[in-house]
Image 1 (cartoon, one colour):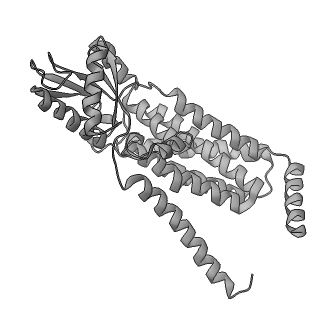
Image 2 (cartoon, rainbow, N blue to C red):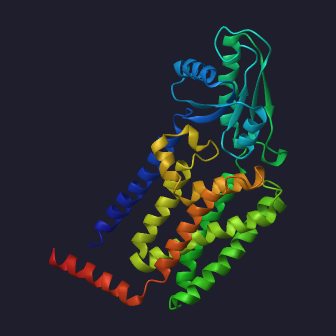
Length: 336
């Protein structure tokens, strides 16, 4: 490239990166509204259907109501992460105009303050329509050291970014390392970085206290999933592939997770993409481990494991396969 054209190329590249960051973050987070927040309602099916119709008139599709015949089963579903709240109507309270005793909304503040506020506002509105007060019970309140519920997202972000840096620094420090040696270094770095971040989160600051060893394990798995994939992308596709990986992980992965707001409040197609990215999976895994006794952790661990396996495969791709791919790309470029 001519010297005079390089500054223009830099400006164009930076502008495109800025476009991705701004479009992804602002597109996901500029207009927050609930979508299909799962709520257990302790009432017969017909009463729940009527309640759902009334709530849809105010906010169509905001809440996904499921009838439960037993309050204890509904509470168990909340703690097992099957629903985000439990609504127990008072007598005659599952439909507008009903009269009777007070209703009860049971929720988990650890899901985040925005969701807690949205649920409280919506169901207190139901209480006003049915002429009954709604008491709110928080069965998993946020601790004093994480009173805004943002520690899980920041723990994950501050783990993902150093994980990418780990892959790059190892490639620079030991450029001639074999695949087995590189995998060993990535594993060792993952355990070290995961341990340091877990110590800061669970011990030094107390932001995510209660499960330090589990947090260390999750942090190490997250580092290995991200670092191995980044290292594999760099090894197979060079700097452009690494840059693309970083863009997918951070400016797309972070807002697609919903961040501290939660995936139920961003466009659902974007949240569906986030479900398959390490950031969203790790946030769910951390939150479910620290606040919900490890319930519903299988799916997030599966996502992280898939990324770790994919990264391992990329790192272990034989040199001949990589040379053939590079040669084919060069030949195609020359013939075009």
